[in-house]
Length: 96
Image 1 (tube, rainbow, N blue to C red):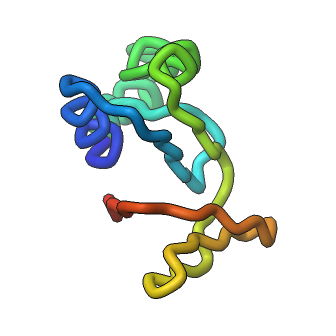
Image 2: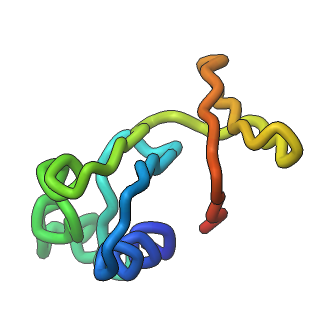
């Protein structure tokens, strides 16, 4: 929730850069406060989604769902993930 909230604020301003969001979970962001309502059967998982996949794509965001960051090289400005892929960055936000 925190990482996407930050991105939502960035998107309010003109930007000409790419955004990649890594997430160990295999689905888009959701309201974790309401997760107990889903587990209790009071709401569906879809009802607590904050931004669906189309939001990511329409905002030019590259979602890396189900992908865990395993290393950050700040000198070379590279993020390494659990698939061995390396993603370069100019600026990095860590939101956990």
